[in-house]
Structures are given as C-alpha cells and as structure tokens.
Amino acid sequence: MRCNQEAVYRQGEGAVGEAGRGPAVGRLLGSDEIDRKRQEEARAFAGQRHRLLLLEMVLGGAFAVLVLASGLSQRLSEWLGTWSTERYLLVGGYALILMALYGLVTAPLAYYGGFRLPHRYGLSTQTMGAWLVDQAKGALLGWALGLVVVEVIYWLLRVMPEVWWVVAGVFLLGLNVALTAVAPVLLVPLFYKLMPLGDEEMEARLTNLAERAEARVRGVFSINLSSRSRAANAMLMGLGKTRRIVLGDTLYEDFTDDEIEVILAHELGHHVARDLWWGLAFQSVVTLGGLYAAHLVLGWGVDAMGLGGLDDVAGLPLLALVMGAVLAVTMPLGNGFSRWREGLADEYALRLTRKPQVFVSVMVRLANQNLADVDPERWVELLLHSHPAIGKRIRRARGFDAGDGSAEATCTREKGH
Image (tube, rainbow, N blue to C red; front, side):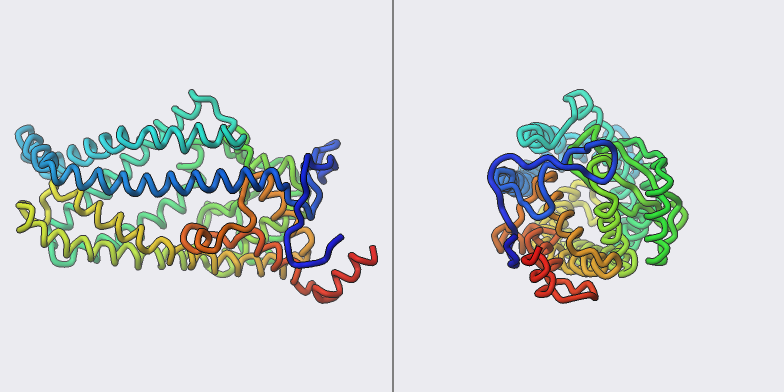
C-alpha cells in the first residue's frame, strides 16, 4: 500500500467483500480506495448542482424585481383590499399568492434538480408519484411556516416600526429552536418512517458512546432513507426529551458496526461542542443583519416606490429581495464557519473512537456511495461547501496519533504488512 497523504484511486469495478452485518453484505470498494469513475460522476453532478443553485438565486432575484417593477405587487395588494380590510387577511392572502406564483416559476428547476438529476446519477430511488407527494407536503409545510413568519413580521412592522427587525430576529431564533425540538416527532414522520432500530447490541453500543459524550438520548431509531435515496446518513436529532440517534437504513444495512460508531461519534462531537447553538447564534446574527438592511430599504421604498408605509404588504418582494441578497453574500462566510465546526467534530470522533483507519474507510465509502467530490477546486470549497473536502478529512485521519504511534509509525506498519 502507498503510505502518503493523498487519496488512492482505482479504476474499474470495486472488489466484493463483506460488511460487518448480515450474510455477505456487499462492499463496493475496499477501505482505502476511491472509485475514479464515481469521482468523475461526482464532479459532473456537483457542477450541475452548482449551476442550478446559481440559476435559482438569479431567478429568485429576477422574480422579485419583476413583481415590483411591473406594478404587479401594488395591484395585487389593492385587489385584495377590495375583498377585505382586515390586515391579517390581506397579508396572508398576498403571501400565499406570491408563494404560489414563485412555486410555479421555479417548478421546472425543482423537478430537474430534485428528480431528474438524482435519477440520472443513480442517487434517487423515488418514483415520480412519490416525489410529487413529497413536493406537495413540503410546499404545504413551507407555506404554513412562511405564512406564520410573514404575519408576525407585518404585525411587528405595524405596531413597532422602529424596532420590528430586532423582535423579528428574536422570534425567528425561537421558531428555529422549536422546529429543531419537534422535528423527530412532528416533521420527519411526515416524510419518513421513524422506528426503533431493533438491534439490541447496536443500540447498546451507540447509547454507550452517547453516554461517554454526556449526551442523553431517547433511543436509537432507523429511518427509511432507501425509500428515496441510495445515500447513507446518520444524525443526532432533536433537543432534550426529543433527542434521539437516527440511522438511515442505507447506512445500517451496508456499513460495519465500527464505521457506524465513528459516524455517530462525529455527530456527538457537534453535541459536545454545542454546535447547534453556535450555528443558531451565527444564523441569528446574519438574519438580524438582513432584517436591519430590509428595514433601511423598506424605509427608502416608502418614498421611492410609493409604498403606503413600512407595513404595506406590497413591499414584501422588496423585503424578500434584500434578505435573499444578504444570505447570498454571507453564504461563503457561513460555509466557512460550518467547515470549521465540522473539522472539530472530525477531531472529536477520532479522539473518542481512536479508530483513524475506520474513519478513512467511512469517508471513502461515503464519497463513493453519496457521490461526493473528494478534492473539489479550492474556490468551490470556499464558496459552496459546508463540510471540509473529503480528501482533507481523509488526510486528517491518516495523520491522527491514535495514542500508540504517530502517522509515520502507522505508515511503517502498513508497509511492513
């Protein structure tokens, strides 16, 4: 074996081996092998996703500008005003119509990026019917939450126009915390079947690992990811009494016990470092900045665009445009923050399990199975990646001192073998 800091590539089909569970569970590749063919597909897949993201951002901005510049926003607000003078009905009706129009405009992108593209690269297992059902559920849930947010913001604009953006930022933080807490019991079951794992040995092993990280969990569960995707994943989901360990069935069936343990250790690293709260704090700062910018721009819009006041719902596209621009500009900063925390979680997983070779195996297998680009171009990683490149994560693990020898000593043993 070559003992260097670079990922090892191989051409052709992977060798068949056994994973740690079940009779002759197939492995596509050995623990130190990146499939070159899959990497070519991963780079092509990533490139198309990035272009779709850019197109969606441009389309969203263009939609908001067009609605404002054409006068459609003002006419829609006036038309709704002929039906009711109740402010909450006017705001709610306007928001629902605008969300529905935007959904229609972006439907082709949603179809291509969410259905056609994953099927083209063999990542999706969904039928068209199942995908449409999910889209309908997601739209209804998004509209419901969006309606609540818009109603609260416009109520604040009406009753406290000078400080509405501060209170709105606090409200959005509270909403995010609440959604995180109820996700395992209310939101996830809308799309997936969440059930007890039913493997006492594995449950005990993962629960013990969580106890070592001082994370109290309500059990170990399985989620039917295979009904929608071939990608593997695991997570620590929920808060307090709703927190639980969740393994995708694609992970549980195909990965070894040691590999699953390492993956969970990474998630526990986020818990120990309180990354959920750090992430919410960072997101809140960005949101607050966006809301303040929207406050300033709406004040300008009252004179420049003839809005009836800050609380004129005809200014909603302007508010959305400003928030979208702020989020787009700060996205690289947010991704950089996320990569830093993900790197710390990797280090924690290595220290907790002391299994760097298993960590390498996990990274290689996730790259092959989830179609992830191992070594993307630097600018792509800086701008668009929320996780360190898998190649960097592999090199970090290979340089890890497990307590019984340095990275160099590990290399010597491998050469001797």
